[in-house]
Image 1 (cartoon, one colour):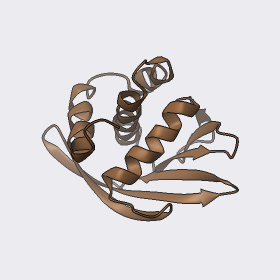
Image 2 (cartoon, one colour; image 1 turned 180 degrees about the vertical axis):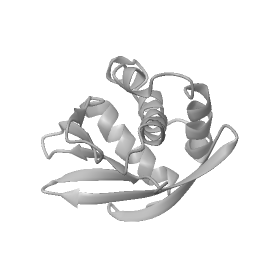
Image 3 (cartoon, helix red, strand yellow; image 1 turned 45 degrees about the vertical axis):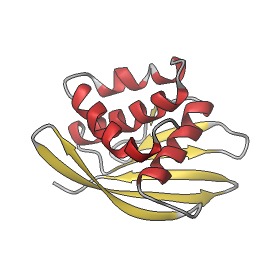
Image 4 (tube, one colour; image 1 turned 135 degrees about the horizontal axis):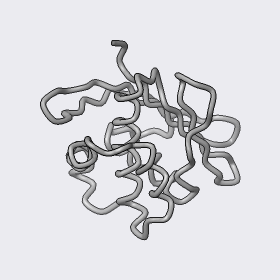
Length: 141
């Protein structure tokens, strides 16, 4: 990760930048991006925007022991497109860093300003069958 001190701010800037796009369409492109660190931050911002616009309860990103990554949203049983193994690992690292998670597991709240409003998410990272799982839980409306 490049400028680790400002990852939270970068996520907010990306949310603002992509606020008027189709988050799912944009999420489908992150695996192919050359800068995997930037792609991870972009994916996190797009996941937040998708969760907000689609009224999701939570979005989970799971990394299997062999490195594969799956993404699921709570509001439906269809999987979302995976960001790929390399970007998926960086997403987990970025999320842990942003919320100040020193351990390999834990949870924290993340406040994000998006355009003229704000949002408080619950971020949880846990070990799961030899892999890791990131859960982004959205507030109830």
